[in-house]
Image (tube, rainbow, N blue to C red; front, side, top):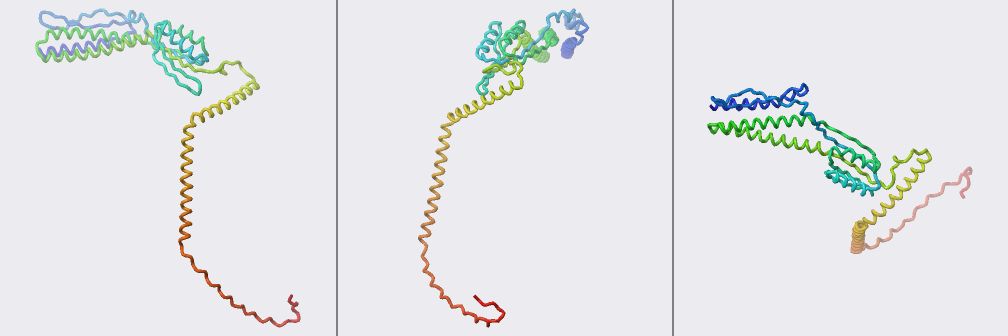
Length: 326
């Protein structure tokens, strides 16, 4: 009896795997088959009644597609645009998934991710794009219909296997068979929960499209939005931008100095203390050198050295051809 239950349990597992692999024939519109077990007068035997499964054409009636939108915007009405996106997303039945704001120089940058119903997402994006300067826009879609059908099929097969094993467990006659069947039921329950979570995730992604807004705050219209300029217009515009940047530099430098004034005061005090310590050490070193010089015994003056007369050499006799000495 023990061997018989092991064989039946192995057949259940093999049939489940075979049913999961049957979806490879979806392009030809083949049918999915399942094996069931029935009770007769001699006990549990494998019978082969094959039910007619749903064809793939009916399973694929509703396509499962995930849409994602990316939109980069520049606007001088930063706060108004942000509030409009959040308000319209909530009004459409969506929500704000994430929001991340940074600041560069004096301008703000926002990454805003919202989720809205898929059938309203494109119109929502078009409306927002018309209220600001669009720098880039993209749309991606992913067809997950086959994955969704695969998950549903695996769930049905696992549920059928669980029902068969549950019925077998009621007929088990010893503890070893019960433990074997219970172990397999635990594995099946884990797989069912995993596939159910995946199915729910696909439903969520398909039902709510993801829209990512990248919003830059600007003070004036960007140069890319202006009409084409001539060479002198570009020179004049560049010169004015250079003057504006110089003014911004000195303004930021002044602000930085005012902000850093407490730190600069502390640094100045530390430098003055160091200079005072160095000068004090130098004065003390000079004073010690003078004291050592004064403490040294005075040497008596040396007596003058007598100077001996230098003997004079006799002059040679005067030669008549020699010139007279001056």
